[in-house]
Length: 335
Ligand SMILES: [Zn+2]
Ligand SMILES: [Zn+2]
Image (cartoon, rainbow, N blue to C red):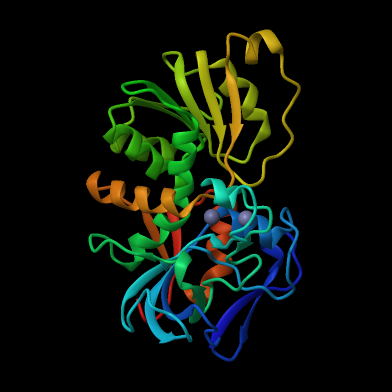
């Protein structure tokens, strides 16, 4: 099969990935194999390719928004049938024993394994997954449009919940890519007013088209105080203006796995009056199930830009340079 591997992390325009031929993976106990039809391109893949995230295994196959059809069952499996369409997310496995796993917070597991970082992901023709961590996918989304739900969607949803947006409140969204445009629609569906701050004019247009109340430049001041905000752009210099835009008691949630340096904060301007700053780390399987059901109920519109699997580096480069709005998705001939 074809598979992209991270060879030598470096700037995306220096080809840090390589397309190789590998034997199809064989599913072990509790695992199923899927024939990949689509795999979303997440900013985390870019961080991995460029070395912002340390590689945890040499030659790992990136990709953790994997959609495909089950084509082989390992021993002791009972969740899925051959031919069933499933989705593989970022959280590949947890230890199931630590204090976090035992208290409903498996996203904070002390020994987690992640798809496309510890275990091979979906930038390939086939992938293997622990069946307990895969999702059944709603019928309303074809492969291209289902893929971005699996990380962009679920993590954005967790960020929204971490921001504790009150019912009918105002939400600020900083950065408007694959994850943000999905979280925005959930917030709108739940009755929020959404203000989007992004430097991309195309993304500003998309935000308004999806129902945002306002759209402005990356660090623009929103037209009303924010009850909650989410920072999707991996840009630490946006933290102070986002905190300053919060109303009393508001919370800013940082959605990314990587953020550039945060400038020094001023306690009075940025944190006093019970403003809060929180991060988001992966997600629980319960988050995933809840989000997928909500995506159906809200009839979420997924802006997906298809690329053939062999153009993975082009997709990553376009993501790095903000050349599209929405989410990039790699497609194989099985899509
Ligand atoms: Zn991701
Ligand atoms: Zn654990």
